[in-house]
Image (cartoon, rainbow, N blue to C red; front, side, top):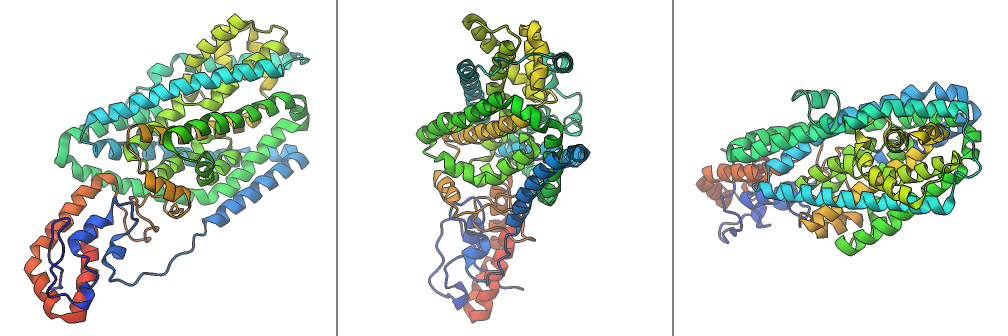
Length: 544
């Protein structure tokens, strides 16, 4: 029978007598299992026991991946200008990569929310998180819309432009495609079946199903823990698949950016440069001044450190023009940074539908631009009315294919039908403006997650500062949060989710209790060999 260390309850110190050299570190099986997960010290069970020699550290090769993405983007831009017709033909490559990412969004959201909600024993905590998040989203959307109106009045970017027949037809087409989706948005939150939310890739439908399942497991108590453990394993599998897909990012980025440049052309960029530059500048100032100030005052976090931590996600968004492509990685990184699963699981998916700061700025700026270009500038009263209307319209952006542009057309169709034709003026540059919208939306949701975590006291501040300082790097190989551990987990070493921590710790403690006396006897009488064996055995048992 393999030697084992004596059992201990959490916090119990090992006996002083009978120590072998292998037990000299004073770490027992029970203590090792307690340290395996959920501690900010970043120690894994192997490190806690101090017995097994550390394996070779695998070099993180993912920095080469993102270097290739940068190179691919530059090559795509060059090809778009040099051979625009050929570049347009590459659009399916970019679309295919984005679709690969999108197919992972629903299972990741489901697993994250179920694990987060199911492991919380008080439903009121989940309600508090959701209420704070929605209140913050409404406030920031209103601020973003107001800023868009202010900048639009100052720049007057539509002056001197004229509406052509082709542009008018394009605007009418966008309005026709958007109106039905915008009206059906509230009902679209409810799926037609349990599985349709996953097959159709609807974020809010997946969110609803996950909340219901999470609350059900919460009510089941201990009997629901095996299901939570199973979902934890599924989450690890999904993130592994996502990590594999990310290696196709350079190819997808090349095809996507080349097609955008080829479709737009240099002439369209020149003619609409004022609104493009104004919009990018406004989004930048909103993120740095508004979001940065709130983040510093409320959470004490430096915005630039947070943006640096999320730099690879911004690169991914820049190359695909879609903030959804970075949603799974945002969930993983926010958990790694110390924000609890319930907060991340509720705030991030909800924010992708209700906290679209970049889209809000775009809606009011573009509306003023179109009104001026058509020779029908809006009065102050009309602008206030438009602001109130767009507060509601912007919440339907996630339910509309094409998001910002389609929502703009649908909003004008309902509020100012005579301006709908003018939407065609900016169809040509919408993909470039989509870049700024997506990055601003992403930054807004990252900041919102930290703020909601701070308000609900569901954030590990010390860990957050350690991660942002670069002392606790994110595991790019697995895209998994190692349960607030430090180094990346070994390839064959599972990392337990929050729903498993208590159960696994208790199981490991029970296993050690079963061999208590044998463990002490073997440890005391066997010297170095028995001590070392107990250390290794303790590690394995603690992980179950």
